Image 1 (spheres, rainbow, N blue to C red):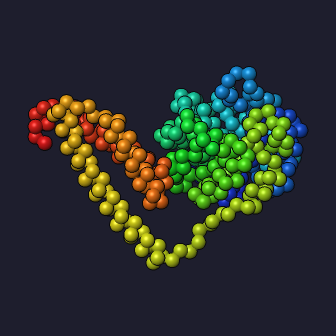
Image 2: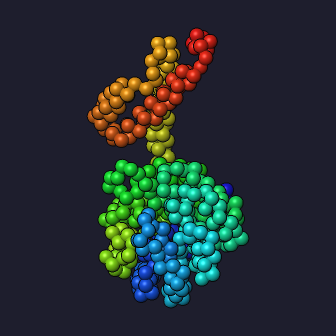
Image 3: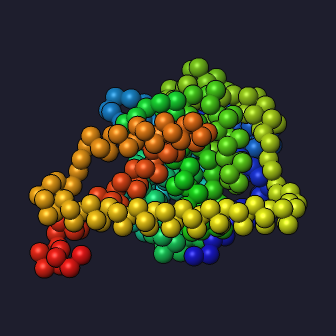
Length: 362
């Protein structure tokens, strides 16, 4: 797939491209005041939610269609491009009717292929940029599928917004980054514009700066940040919105590495060493899997179940502790062990399902 990175003819693609504005449109004063302050700081794209999908009924679900008239005023008075979320075909029609310049598709919509197809059908034939947020759950293929549906509808100005993924294990972030998922997306589609939404990812305004820096260090194209001229009064997500002044400060303190000139010989030597260790690692894993197969045959012959929870826990605890002593982060080691164990279990289950004649030929 070939994407058109130039969302708008006069948009500067120098990193970071910033899209900013309130979580929700609330009043005409709120929208215009926030937009004017952002425009004064050089922000070119104004984002604001007209319709807000909420987890439970009774919460503020957006001002609705009348807010689109205020976005139109933003364009007229500041010259900014406007962007809003759409979650139905009717949203698409209303937004386009009022001249909204860019659409984004939220995490709750991306997860639903039926809805994604309806939205794709609605934008077919339009020359309008569309941003796709990652699905709520950490599923790369759902994200890719949403992009493909839009592409098949003729949309070429497609970008993605990484806003983190829901997790039962709530720690520091509102939505866990799972950076490896957007990294794999970038590997598949290197020309796709990629934005980070540190507001939804962190859920707290104090996390916006460090998350933005991480995104820049990972070569993201831009940032999708919620701002409000009075965040403490916001009707939705007040804790993760910042003022335009704070946004300006964060952007000024960002270190944006545009790509230096490495010592090719030295870098090549480092990479050659990594390749050597990777080869050894693959060989060791292969040897380990051969032992797992032998264990699988033994378990089958002796009527022993595949999963041995106590043994698995022992391996995890000992190896994670060993790794920590060698300077390897515990969660990194645990993920590696979990992947190896999952494959070992798969191999042993496969052996259990073999007929006896094949088992005897081991």
